[in-house]
Length: 111
Length: 89
Image 1 (tube, rainbow over the protein chains, first blue to last red):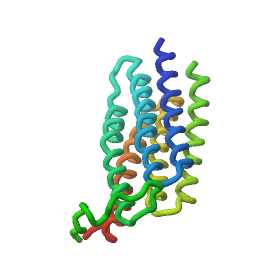
Image 2 (cartoon, helix red, strand yellow):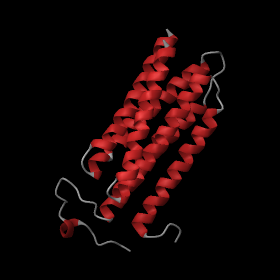
Image 3 (cartoon, rainbow over the protein chains, first blue to last red):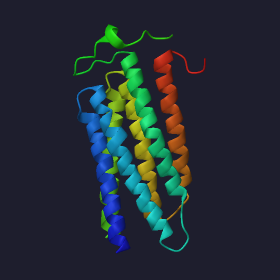
Image 4 (spheres, chains in turn red, green):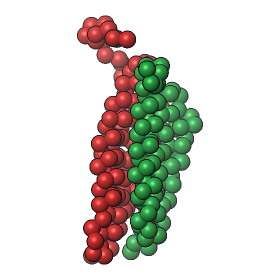
């Protein structure tokens, strides 16, 4: 029973990690590429970490290191994605979609 | 069951490494390369966790935690450099 649960979690995690990186390699502009690693890969690594938490908690003593890594990854992935998108907008990486109107509503850059 | 699933997971994560490495090398702009590096360290965490389950050794999590923290700091520093042209002002 535990074996099946672990196998499902590991397989799900590995598939999501793979799909996230496939999106990173295959999608066509930076803003769409940002979706793959920040959502799919984070979920995949989260699944793998939960699988290993269950695996090392199975023989009695609770193992909380993995939960620490999971929490850290789930907190930092959106922050780094936000910073990456901000940097890409700042240096005006070209996008498939037309850019939003620049001078109408964006305030001038403070620096 | 676990003995058949873990090699498949290794193979999938290895392909994920190849894809993010491809984006790190090819990526037309600087943010693409940073994103490739970011994905590379997340994949490293994944493969360290898999190694920990496979070899039954909980010591790999210290390495995974360190890589997760250092990778985040590296990504933030590189983005900061792109945004401001400087890391520590």
